[in-house]
Length: 117
Image (tube, rainbow, N blue to C red; front, top):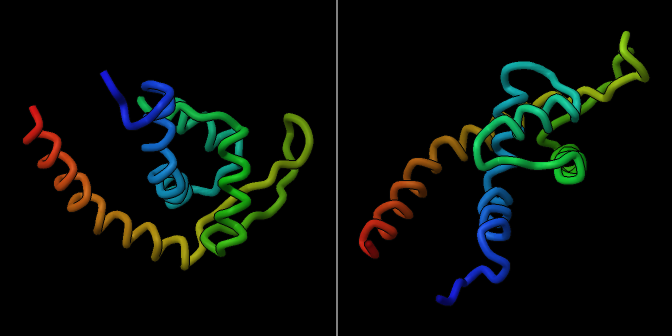
């Protein structure tokens, strides 16, 4: 059988995650400010979003560069200071747009996939 994504299931999941994970991070930050390891842990607990710090920290840097999150340092009782991230008004707007468009996109993909069964 031939697959469009060479490399099997893991590579396929990685490609699907790439399109949605930044919005998952923004959604996590809507409820409270978090530091990188916390975000990584939350994402890894969600089925199908298994990720690593090597994915999350560059993503947080990009989100910060794009103005979707900002950060601040806070002392920790359990070690060195931690960089906490919070969503900006631009990040809230981007997440709102994603939330509005996601059901339409998801339903369209589901519709096309169900035709192929």
